Length: 218
Ligand code: UTP
Image 1 (cartoon, protein in one colour):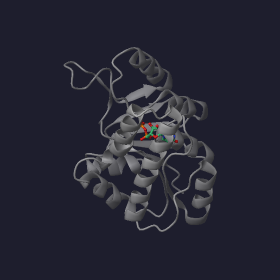
Image 2 (cartoon, protein in one colour):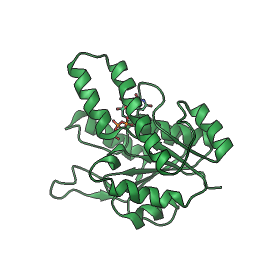
Image 3 (cartoon, helix red, strand yellow):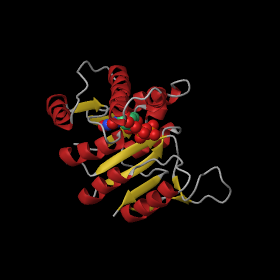
Image 4 (cartoon, protein in one colour):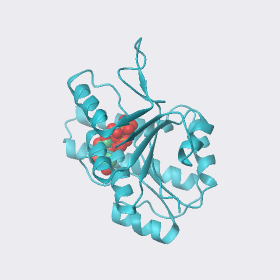
């Protein structure tokens, strides 16, 4: 049985939904899957608005979680499913047990859906998480800058070092966070970073075939 977990970045809901439709096309063929969906623009917009209005960070996370669940329900319905969106890893495991498939968003405040995808992978016994995102590789600096170098392979330690440097620097977008990498490291779960922009390449990554992107492993 294919036990890969997919972490679907909320950025796939931007633009005209053509990338989302491509993803749905790929996944509709599968009988089993585990997909964790991010909050994207709707999460960011509401969080920014409510932060300005003085809501606590805890409550902003709760807002973000609702956005991830809205996106998860969208993906689930697009895939033709009728089951509820589980609100915890334990419930997700139950859903997997019953249906062989699950689509979920966030769980509790304090982390991201990437961390949820790694925790689900641990609990479900999967050794690979495919992180579907809007960047094609991890780069050593902002890919828009001249001379930016892309990585096809990185160790957990190398990514953690990069994340440390980033937190001191510009805070630019990076497709993984420290907690997620630490969970991956403790259970030796490979993380494959792939862009949603090239349908065939995305399909290859999801199916565990050779793909263009960054592999994070031991
Ligand atoms: P995301 O997982 O989409 O956050 O959840 P992100 O990594 O910041 O977004 P991208 O990948 O850059 O688009 C959206 C927000 O929901 C809350 C957090 O506030 C997060 O920033 N959240 C999500 C939680 O608090 N717990 C969860 O389990 C999931």
